Amino acid sequence: MSKRALLSINSHARNGKNSLKEAVAALENSNFELVVEPDLKPDELAKLIVRQQHQLDIVIIGGGDGTLNAVAASLVKTELPLGIIPLGTANDLARTLKIPESIAEAVKIIADGKLQYIDLGCVNDKYFFNVASLGLSVKITQNLSKGAKRRWGIFAYLFTAFKVIIKVRPFRAEVRYDDRSFKIKTLQIAIGNGRYYGGGMSIAEDAAIDDELLNLYSLEIKHWWQILPIIFKLRGGENQGLSGVRTYRGKKIEVYTRHPQTINTDGELTTATPATFRVIPKAIAVFVP
Image (tube, rainbow, N blue to C red; front, side, top):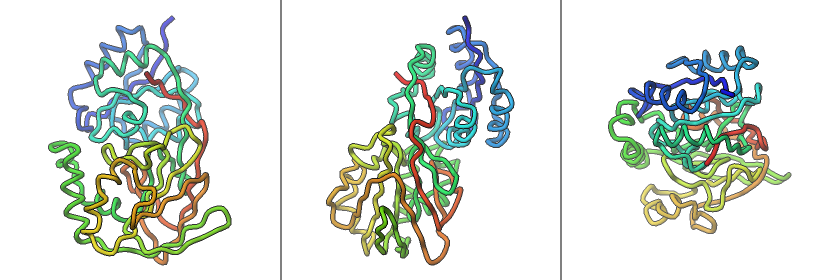
């Protein structure tokens, strides 16, 4: 018996331009009945999922982390399972779930039907799969053009990060958790739900997207060049005990700043401090290898 699937491909994603025809052919060959809605705006796609929930078995999204983030709330509401075809620049959620970037292989995973329930992070009622952050990463997002992402891929993040980090200044914040608090001066606070973010960086070397925990790190260095000796350990998530890096793991974290600080959720600027971060266990079912 065929399953009815809503398929939406973001043709503006880095690898999305010519992917629709291949994805449709692969899914139809795997006995899916498709409702194809390419290039809907994020809010339109989310509303469509809710509106058609009783006529659908699956939602399949082709795009990057931002495209997937846009449908998170509608998937929580409808409880429809998610199929992922990674077509973005970073594809950090796909990397966390070990979903390959090949359209044919991604479709096979959906067709095989193995589901995994994963956690979602939530900050001020905005969901995130991978990471929510403030400080340095926001400046990178603000300076990262879509053209550079499409042309240079992951290297665009590196080029932009280098340009930004030599100019960015620390900010003061108060972090509260477990009836305790600490005040800090930091370049960045990152709070991860999944394993990867920022094009393959690890929030923590043992982080998992179904462990019902959030992982925080705060980058507390005074000068930008102090990041150089620790940058590779940060990339691998080996931040425990690093000089200039504070870490914490928990289910709920609050962050307060004197002036509102913009917050980046899965690469999109969506909310600001004061902020409450929490984990939503087993929030969404996703097809995995």
